[in-house]
Image (tube, rainbow, N blue to C red; front, side):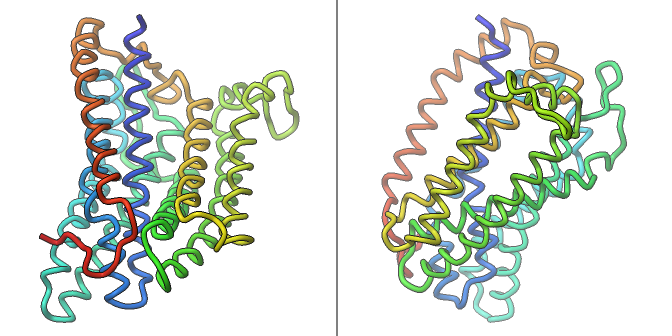
Amino acid sequence: MDLALIWAFLIALAVMLYVLLDGFDLGVGILFGFAADDQERNTITASVEPVWDGNETWLVLGGGGLLAAFPLAYAILMPAFYIPVTIMLAALIFRGVAFEFRHKAVRSTTRLFWNGAFAGGSLAATLAQGLILGGFVQGVAVEGDQFAGGAFDWLTPFSILVAASVMCGYVLLGACWLILKTEDRLQGDARKWARRALIAVALAMAAVSLATLSIDPRVTERWGVSMSAINLAKFWKVAPVPAAAAGLIFLLWRDLFRNPEGAPDWRPFALAAGLFLTGYLGLAISLFPYNVPFAKSVWETAARDNALGLMLAGAVVMLPVILGYTLYVYRLFWGKVRVGDGYHG
């Protein structure tokens, strides 16, 4: 049994669930800044209030799992991304404080500050995650078993492009969540936001895909596509992923642009989540088996098998519990949110 590969899959699953679940509530936080009035702002926060704390559980599992299962990868990657990781964590903390304090604010100026802090913290955390992803995909300088680059290696035109793309994607997820959870004028605004975000996401996915092909020859080799030629024998094996992305973009465009009233409210969010999944699979195709691109593989950075086996025994018990609780909470708070339905404590 390949324990390193199993743990790579589990960590990838945790990160994907974090991206989908916390991604939509970060997107909701960004859109919070565009709400028309306090009534809309209260409805927007009420739509995520029962679930948003639990969504960040998957970030803890992903980071903690990386430290425990792949300590060498953690030791290399953390120094490479100290600055954006610190920004992300500070923004998530500040965003959480603002989420609670905006409900307690009495004076309009104080409420305005905390409203801005919630939207700004959501945006800062999103951009930091995008910069981390972009810096990760472009590769990390390694000598021996140590990070050998500079403190700002992650800040490049490619990582900025990825950060902007992640922001557009989170806004799309957040807008589709609001379509699912809200009604009337706010739902109409959410459809408008989702239309704009979908156009941006389609363009961003194309731009990032082309830029990624120029990152490393091994990525080009994996896809069988270069700027001058296409190896059809290799490309057809991976073509279902971009084809699925194109199909999901078309279906989402149809629901948002051509038939917004005929589509069930849950479908845009499901399609947007599927679109994120195709992007994630595309990254997996480009980067596997490296978890320190393009220097160390999952097998080179894994902990000893006895440690991986012991942790896997715990994960087999705990992961179904966490998944079951997550599904229960989403099922419990399913349905439309109206002002007054918030859970402010």
